[in-house]
Length: 98
Image 1 (tube, rainbow, N blue to C red):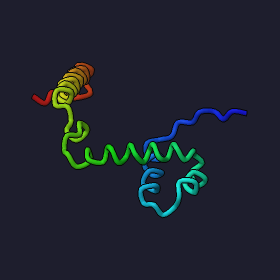
Image 2: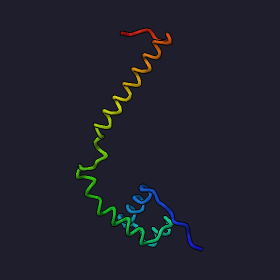
Image 3: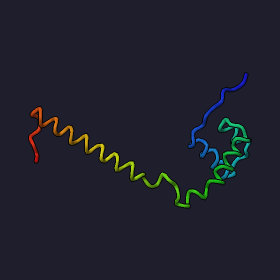
Image 4: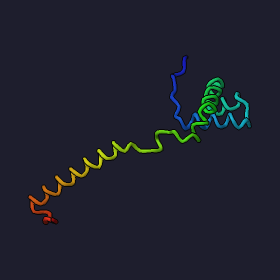
């Protein structure tokens, strides 16, 4: 019977790849330990080594937030707050602060 295709998380792949890079165990031992094929471990190890330089290059997009998106969200929340404040003033639940 053919085994169902599995999707491994990025953290799992990183854990396996780091174990392979350490070299404490053979690929076969790691394959048995993590229940994946040795070729898959080799692929993940190579992907990690190929992408290792991006950790230190400072060009990662996830470091800096998108300012346009944040300003849009601030504007949206300001409008909501103003609307709710005026609605509460109308129903007498909030005294006019201004």
